Image (cartoon, rainbow, N blue to C red; front, side, top):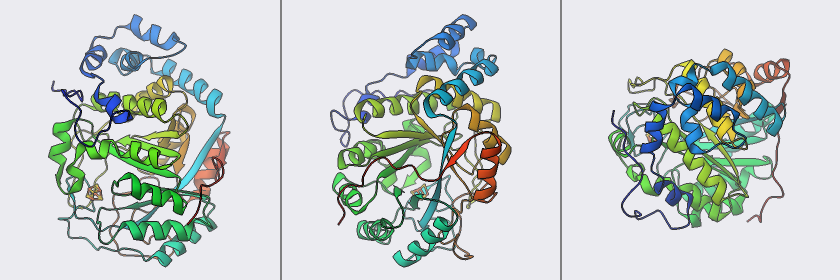
Length: 390
Ligand code: SF4
């Protein structure tokens, strides 16, 4: 088994002291990974009964021994979620701005080498898309784009946010990582959330799948959420792409440790985590290490038990039946009716999507399923007055 620690001899450039990223780099994950292998039924029983759980308890809950107690994990995760969040799920929609990208990532449909139909929305087309999403009920939008610093520039992003802010109460971005000054400009334009997935925390896998482009800089990406929080972002989203690294448990430990570090350092921010499972993408990519449904359920339950206050987000990559079931186990945010190509909402477009959507139900059908499960679909959930505007 090859598991490389994220602990380093010295702090790398791009990871400042006092950041959650630096806290993560000081965490030796190798002993925890060993604990997963060695956990016995009595360890699982103790972790299940614990009132507050450590990262070591989380490791135990990822074990095969804990897999044998999946029903107990599920019941406990359900009770914890209802106690902390009630029976609610917050809805959001991704709004793809552009599928232009100069980076080469082996698993992504937007990768620079892929011969696909490219499109970048004008700021006014972005507003048209947002209005369409608003008419479908959404008040929380996640602006997504590939990495192209000239076409999807800082000024372009700030302009999009500025135009949307009067109409959309909650705007987050999932775009290439920037410096704190750029995040500050986005915050001042009306952006409140930053989403940055590390994709995999294993450095060698990270280097192998991020072949070309700025995304190759592991440490600069790792500290992006710290820069965003420092700039005033109030919602922080992190995640790992399950199936990228052959050892899903290593990435689960790392992303959970990162979430805990962010929640401690940036305790005024709302932190949420997503664990998208890789799906086929343009360029012929097929996931090499798929994570099955039972394993995925165990992981989500373990996360909920480890970090009761953590938001857990679930995308339309997952099938409808599984999404409906996971609602009871810890999911607090869901996208619905998603298009992963730029311009997919207001009009038909031939632009290439980033990945195949699995839950293709329209948002009102997803909301109806949520309600019939006894949960409230929350379309708007603001976290206080917006900061200064331009
Ligand atoms: S993952 Fe991001 S940076 Fe990599 S190819 Fe896709 S859009 Fe570009």
